Length: 120
Image (tube, rainbow, N blue to C red; front, side, top):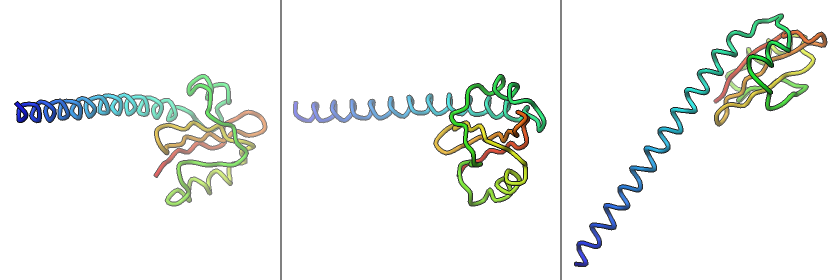
């Protein structure tokens, strides 16, 4: 009887782990679908577009910042250089996933001057 109880406990533990993995994979795939949809919308933003178009396409940003930032600086030096030279007055920032950041630079007239995204 004791051996059967150990087997039942082991089977229940294994079923729990399998269920947890399945749940995480569904969660992860949903997040990837959401990220890809956002990337497509972001790609349709063009330099010179009005900020109102950006907000209509991408929704409310997570932050409005005076300095440019994306997921990390290392490996994205070109993005930082383009943003610095863009003449942007501020940046609208959307954080997606663990460390994927989308940033749109807007000038004082409300026009897009930079758009970059990146992560680690």
